[in-house]
Image (cartoon, rainbow, N blue to C red):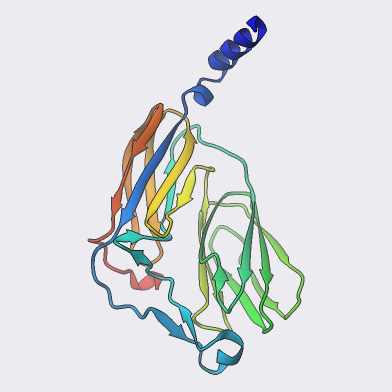
Length: 229
């Protein structure tokens, strides 16, 4: 028992960031009215794709804004790259919005019985333009630099997705109700950034200590950015 107490004391002294880490929780809200179609028609591809697919550019549930990437910016923030999956399924990308730390690996596959063309638009990461035939093997790519990457299918104009590549592993994507949480944050002062594909970006300063820090963003005053549509 005495040995365990000594070990816990050493961990407490040598790893204060671990002992006193906190979390950032909040909600993204949007209450303005924008007339965007709820679904998009697939035209001549309706036999394989269905006649309509959901329009994911602006998903709001009881004023909660979904698919906002919330990421932390500051000194001494690092983390571990991970492995992520992007699937072409039902003639849409799943997930529509992704976030991952730089140097992470993205595994791209197609579960659809028709052809797709995956085309990435980026500045700091190597762009990809590749055809996916039915039953094609997965394609792996590494995203090495922080930036926002847009993905489109050149064959099906309604298909698009976004990947936010971050500098560290402290990020989250707002859920259906607009909620988010970033866990195990070392104590300190940071900038918290929130990005949405057509409403743009907002940021605010946060101070994180032990326990929960509550932070919220309201995008109701943001105008859709035509360059992002």
